[in-house]
Length: 237
Image 1 (spheres, one colour):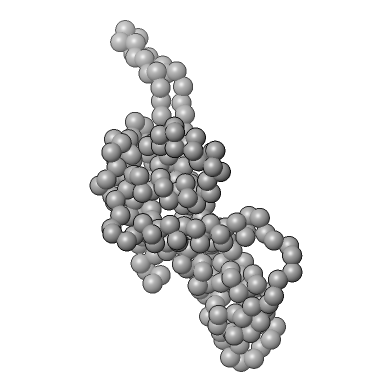
Image 2: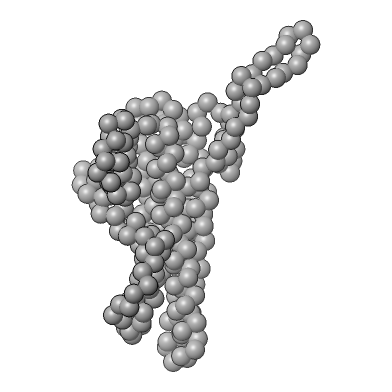
């Protein structure tokens, strides 16, 4: 945070009420508090699981080509699991980033009250806070709204999984019918979710728009924290 010490792994330390006795040379303080950049490990988890989904996708294709039914089903299940984690982690990263921005640049109380009164969906709150605090190119706000809603829809299916029966769907690569989760929680959707969350956070921390001093200063540190993940993402392309 702007008035604390931030470590390389995203932990921030704040020491309050520091007192120095010039006679004895002793130092005392009222208390120590810490916080962590929760969006950072979630992005890293999304990146790791996306890589696993990509590797498994190749195994899935190879199993299908040699018509190995058991290997195909095993790879399909493994890809779905990795994609589920990658999609969840991507949404959690974006949600944790929203929480940090909200803490550094609190929205007006009347807006928060309106959100509560209208039961505004979480994805709409996230989008609105992003647009209030960061600069976006023309046309980007609509894309931000649409993609955020799509990501949170996938997240809700994972956090609150429906248990009812649904029609089978065609897998995007195998072109065979499976239970819907195996056709939705795929490498493609995991990749899109990860890339979107990473892009939103990257654009935000590099933005010159924030009016709040604390948010501007925090963005400088956040850019440094994000660099290793951006490097890994570039290497995986």
